[in-house]
Image (cartoon, rainbow, N blue to C red; front, side):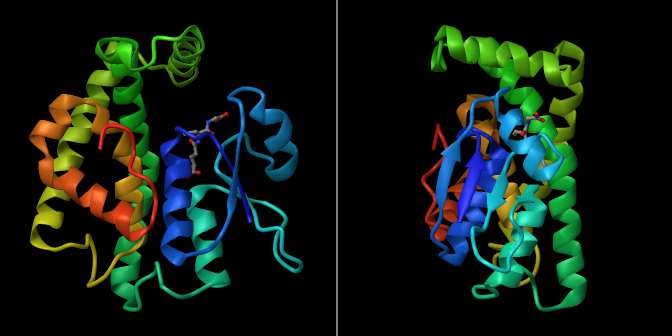
Amino acid sequence: MLLLQFSTSHYCRKARLALGYKGISYQTEDLTPGLHILKVKSLTGLTTLPVLLPQIVGQPQAIADSTQICKFLESYQPEPPLFLTDSAEQSQAAMLEDWLDESIGTATRFVYYQFRAGEGKSIDPSLFSQMVIKIVRKQYGINDTTVELAQKRLANALSVLSMYWENSDYLVGGRLSIADIAAAALLSPLALIPDYRQEYPQVFARIINIHQLCSEPLPPGL
Ligand SMILES: N[C@@H](CCC(=O)N[C@@H](CS)C(=O)NCC(=O)O)C(=O)O
């Protein structure tokens, strides 16, 4: 299998965690932001990464979207399962995954790129990196006002997820699910921001642990 990705994307990390958890061997191809559209649009009709190319006869040519990739992996190789057996628990995990994808992953992006453009500029002050940050901020409308809203959304999410992970190793049910994978991936960029690390140590401890379970190298900052 080949995973088309941006190496730093938290949605691509989510797909890698799922592949790693299942122990599926795969390769990655890092695409250049902007130019990626030339390759991806004709394959999936979308412009987003990750995209998985199973490269297996009888399987789809390309699968876009991290949630669809997880679903494909679950049906391609059910063990170890990412979906919970109890259908009420699985619905809850899927709802959390959707919330993390659509709301929290976006909020993380806003707060992360605000940090990288300001206090965190020294992480990579190269012209290329600063140019990418500028383009991303423009593309998604990242500014002081939208960042403030994202920070509020994240504060709420992090206190809820901390509480869940304090009560149990797993967000839903008695074992790892797509909810844990989505949370570990989509919150991971916050590891570079000292305030979040200080305020929610148990969240980052869990993110480390999930990466270990999935044999995925830790995100920057951890
Ligand atoms: N819901 C999608 C979101 C993926 C996403 O937003 N990917 C970003 C990178 S973090 C992307 O490809 N952006 C480039 C674009 O939209 O052209 C998923 O879960 O795969």
